[in-house]
Image (cartoon, rainbow, N blue to C red; front, side, top):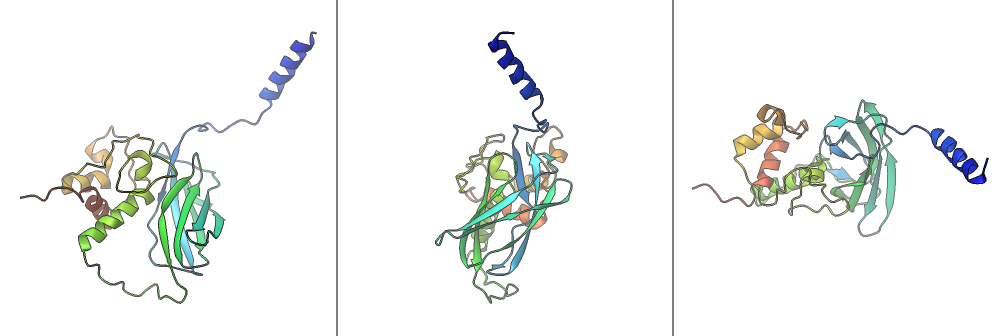
Length: 228
C-alpha cells in the first residue's frame, strides 16, 4: 500500500477513536445567579448559586464551573470550583480575602461570563447592619436593576449601554434595549412568566422575584419620559 494511503488510513483510525464530544459542543450558554449577594464582608464565606442554560433556555448538567475573582487595585486573585447540587444548578462558597472592588467571572460553557463588580466590605463589618437610606431611592433601584441585568444573564442576549459588559459582548439573540421603555404592568408580567405573554418566545423564565422584577423595570424605564 502506498505510504500516502497508509498515513490516511492511520488518520481515519485515530479520528474514529477520539472521545465522543457532548451533543451540545459548540453552542453557547447563559449563567444566571440565583440572587445578587447582600453585604459581602472580607474573610466571611458567601454562598453563590446559579443555573447554566444552553441557548438561554435548557439547563446544562455535569459541568465543572469555575468562578475567578480579581481585586481591582491589588490584582490579588483566586478561583473556586462550583459543584452541581441539582440538575443544571451549581453552587460555590467564596471567601474574599480583602475589602475593595472585585471583578469576577464565571467559566462554565463557552466564553467566560463576567459578573457585576462586587464591593467587599472590611473585616468586622456587621453584615446585618441596616444600610443608610439612599438619597434618591428611584436611582438606587435602577442601579440595582442594572446589576441584575448582568447578574441574571440578560446582558448575554440583550445589549444595553447602561451596563458594562466588556469581556463577553452580547450575542444579540434578543433586541437591543438601550432606548427601550415599556408599560410597567406589561413588563412585570413578561419578566415573571414570558411564555404566558407569548408562548412562542425564546425568552426563558428566570425565576425572578418581585423585588428583582421591580428593579429591572426601574432600570429599563430609567430614561423614559414621565407620564403626564
